[in-house]
Image (tube, rainbow, N blue to C red; front, side, top):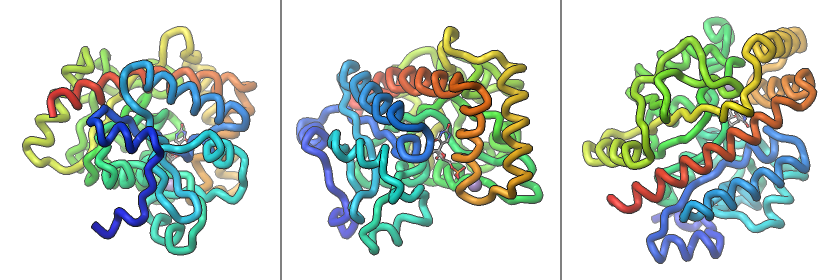
Length: 306
Ligand code: PSU
Ligand code: MN
């Protein structure tokens, strides 16, 4: 296949592929543009360790020197975490970054594409992009949603952040036939909080149940992703009225400064961190680790039935 020449597997991921071990994809925008240094490096390493401890192999994905890396070395993680030459890379950015041998930190959309090319079915992250508030005038809808509409990778996240219009995000996913599944919950979590005013489409109570659903979807050749929404642990959740007022303030500032395009999400995350005195970052780290545990469990189960 032509795409093979662009892929470079780490030793660990290559061995996992050869021995048929479960593999879990991880994104890199969260490293380069979603969290500050050094928490980004520490979190990546801890998340990878959690996945290993559950019997799966982590494959953190990024573009380095125009190659799609499936699994990163410690030096590569360190590079992504510190360099300012790493572009935020979504679907539209991949051909340019590859052809010009540049570096890219892959978003949910781009990580799904690369995971799919590498034959990886399960992907763990913190939050997905979605339909932004006031999208009716800005048309700001993340390419993540369009990817979920077409690429066969299940994405474990902590629900949709309220920097987004959660209701419109759910409508978009419904139109494209993307199931939104609550892991041990009926309510869609909102990233920093365990609940939101919205319901999920289905609730599953175990990684086995979740894997069975992904397998059924595959049997029917229903292309597209699945959103698996796993609530932040109770002890790490932020108080709802607190985080809501912070998000309102961050949105107002983004608007006032005229932030647009791919800068919107990183700007809002940075502002929220600043306004919460780092509490949002602590919550973000906790929820990603929690997602890693669940995602690895699903990958292991899915591997057994495939
Ligand atoms: N949400 C987070 N942290 C992140 C992102 C989202 O809490 O780092 C990143 C993900 O990589 C996601 C991307 O795919 O932002 C969405 O960006 P945009 O809205 O520009 O599509
Ligand atoms: Mn956008």
